[in-house]
Image (cartoon, rainbow, N blue to C red; front, side, top):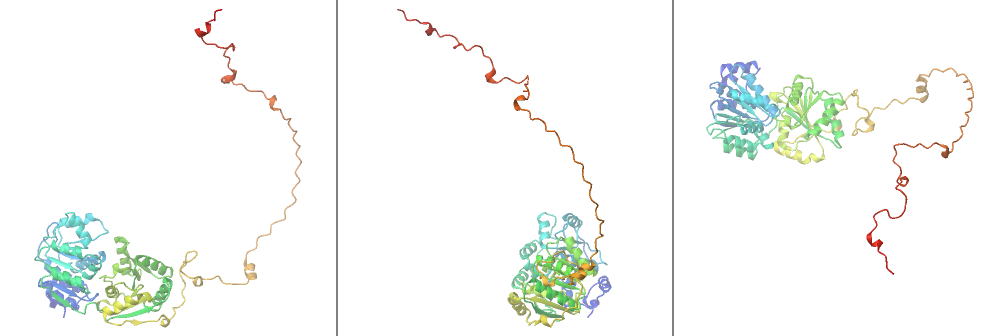
Length: 483
């Protein structure tokens, strides 16, 4: 089967051919005709099978007829992360180049002013994350009453991120007679409940068993005993012996992402990082460097595990075993895409036994174990210069030591100081005459300085002669006793 057999327009077929595609994937072959027939649909397929094109291509043909109105988008695509939303926007630009469709991207981390201006002009396709969409809706900048087509992509990831209440609220604000498409790699009970509530007699398309992994991906578990340094050492050995063209390394924590990226750079690897604490322009810049090949190793948190379509990823390394079994399916799905082969390694410790058991139970297969003793030692390579003092978590035995040589040889190589001429005897200084001692003047001989303006002391004031009572004489003192 080829794309021309799916009922797409000639303009759209030309864009698909220019992109280098001739045959649709199983999910595309099954989903595109149903979407063109305006039916609700549930698409379940493993990651990397072309789910994005299975709704983008028919949407372009459906929206080719009609006109957009201000603040009232004609279609809505909900994505869990900014990166996925930006990737879907790239697909619309690539496949819709022969159509005059307007598009707006509503994601966090960027200015809201430009997004509001695009909505006021009117858009045919609105691609949004639930948080930013609800924010603009609460401000009155958008109306959803004119939206006739809703796509919920990566629904299981929406569930993990806690977006299901927002999606339920968004669905209540849309017209009842709309077309709804739901895509997911897994189908947990909350997603099935959501589909039963908001989809009308949907067609269910499964190209593989839910939560199954790609058969083109070679999976290995690598037991590691020890601390984080031992895990980093094991990872570097695997990177050295494997033919790694491009690789994505997943970690559970953002702090681990930063520390691992710094460690890889110190050992001479061309690596970058992407995690949730980075601003949106920084994340897009790192992805662009990875796609261009300026860096060939991308250390990431699970923010990059869902839906990112990066061509040519040969290896995936799980530095930490994922906490949720579904995340394992999405992580290793970054390699082996579009029919290519890939390799996935997961470094595990004794604490990961329960997580691995859940992963094997979900995927229905036992993953092969690889012992580090079977991994050959990489050829000695010159390490990148380190900062003074090295790292605290690296043992001292790993640090290069100075070459030990006899003390006599080192002393012989030292440049000798030029011998200085012997100083002559200093001339004897002439004896200075002894000063005559000044006679010590007695304290009483010093002239007393009297300030004229100084007020006289109280006892020095003259108040007249002391003749007794100086006041008026009381009359009773003049009385005499007669005799």
